[in-house]
Length: 396
Ligand code: ACO
Image 1 (spheres, protein in one colour):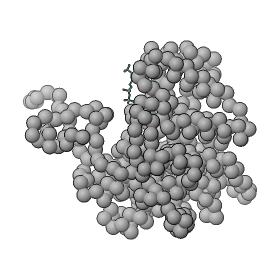
Image 2: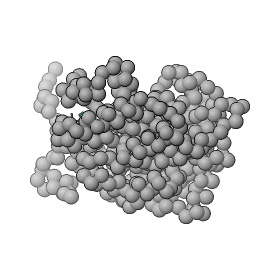
Image 3: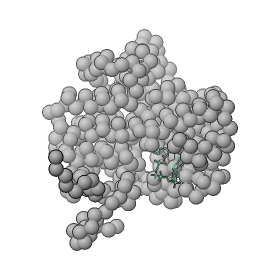
Image 4: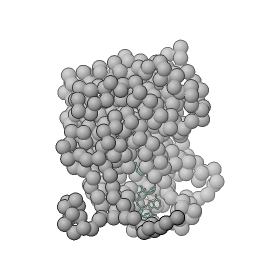
């Protein structure tokens, strides 16, 4: 790697790099990606092994603290998270101020931002105990907030967390449980969600994580930084793609257009139409997460006894695109968002909740990066340069 700071000082040149395609903003020891080979590892562990053998909390511990937890460490971590799930009653009422049709991603980000107002005394990035307390609070409360954003959007009463349950079970109950009725867990859904959250848990310097780091570089607090990251994730070119994929698949089904014709329109870039859930800045090979999600989609739908023609359309789209020179030349493959929506839909989540599920999965990664940055003596406030191209000087 070139030390750009040194080079620009010596030569007086400025590097212009739209979209930071060629610029490393930090050193990091959290996640390794080899985009050409389709490899993804968290702290050195292949994503395939983690998704198969570990729980989401194991992986959160790995990302945040650097190691998979021992049995005792996991028990203590899990216990601490369970003890912090309750929201302040006033924060429950925060949702009353939002319109019923508020997008759950906007509601999630707003309520996470509002969390900052409750724990101001513990906003100290230099105090490890306080950072840890904020970490646990955010891990515990964000899923509850996310479930309330869902309940708000469908007009149902909020449930209190049930801390006798695991992280994922609790989350499912908060979303699908109905007050005064017993909630029966579906183990297929529990394992599928556990797996999906693990697959989303980190992806090094993506747009939302870079946002978390940029905001955090000003020493803004963890909740404020993550709230900004949630907004960054919401865009259709990033996490919002999982919702956009379902809209695209539904559009194809409802219009009766053939998959081949749709792909032709994509290739003509008709009105900017893209194959959503395809392409990635880093992967120039099959996204390893997409491989696992595709396999999960087939298994979970079969296990839940759901037959969804949208899965057939997605599979056909993939087949047609992968055989086409346009996609081959540009090395465009399905990314993690291509098949996730079909699974979330089969579980009963509305489309507008899909990106919220991504956000819950990505939370340990955001926290791990925020903490890594705070401990790195090289960290500086993020402040890119520009090349000014406006008028040189004018007078009124
Ligand atoms: N459909 C059709 N063409 C595409 C697609 C797509 N999904 N993605 C890229 N291309 C084309 C571009 O038009 C461009 O073609 P050109 O050379 O003829 O102009 C070429 O492939 C290179 O694309 P870029 O936009 O330069 O690639 P970049 O790395 O900047 O963008 C991105 C990556 C944003 C993910 C892009 O592939 C995209 O928009 N995909 C669809 C949205 C999506 O699925 N986002 C989720 C990404 S994964 C995640 O965030 C979790």
